Image 1 (cartoon, rainbow, N blue to C red):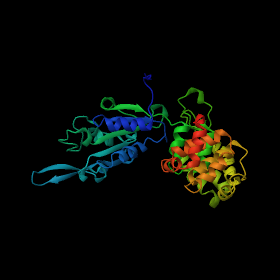
Image 2: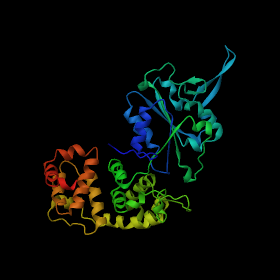
Image 3: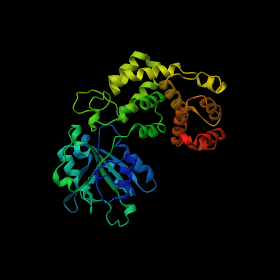
Image 4: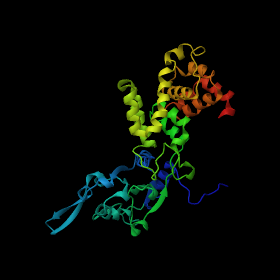
Length: 363
């Protein structure tokens, strides 16, 4: 029997599932800055692509006219509200509406959006959503996001709103969860290698033991940049363009993206990438090509290989990997299998299958 940890956080995937399976519940998803709360919309939209359309609402940047406008009905001598097209209510399908950063919106905007939070008859202006719909699978889905109150970034919500919503807190992903996402989203190998070697870069300030962590967001400190899943994705673009910009400009840009401590530590991993044996030399001589001597260089090579390897190169690369310590062999195998596009190729490769059979105890 599993142990229930009351009051615990949920993962992004768990939050998305809760929202999808409870279309009559209005969830407010809270979490630290930059941990991927906004990606919940794409997760749900991908799952329900055949039945629903999605609508992203950037609440802090909305004006009243971005929600609905009064239109005169001359026949009845009354006015009606016409919703903005961005809500996609005119398309004839149930809608997944994400009220992003709802808790930072201006009060008039939150007041106008407030009827969307009703459970029995959500509406926008005078238009009732899901009117006459009885099947839960055909209902629209409405949820909101916001930051933790302890983040200190201006989130607030009135008591009558709180009573209509269910708050859930999304945990900051640890390095293993982030790497699983990164290998499927074209993140630069240098960034993935650095995170694997510095897992504390994805720790949370809510953990009292992380008070001196120089990488992470901390509302008790004055910061211009810090490491988060969002800023790591930005840093990936910067590292990928390093040859065009040179080392000084690259480090300056990284400092602006992830903070000075992380940028300086990442500089060594950039150097590792530039000192590794070429991909062609590895494939041409897998039993003689240079093997990295440091953990950082090994990490950069392994994560780079996950992105480069294909049907033709996997067999010689497996021969090359056999010369590495078992830790790095396992790292390559696990993360290759976590890559949705590379997994079928890996399982159909005889050299990879042989390695799995011989090294089952490492996985």
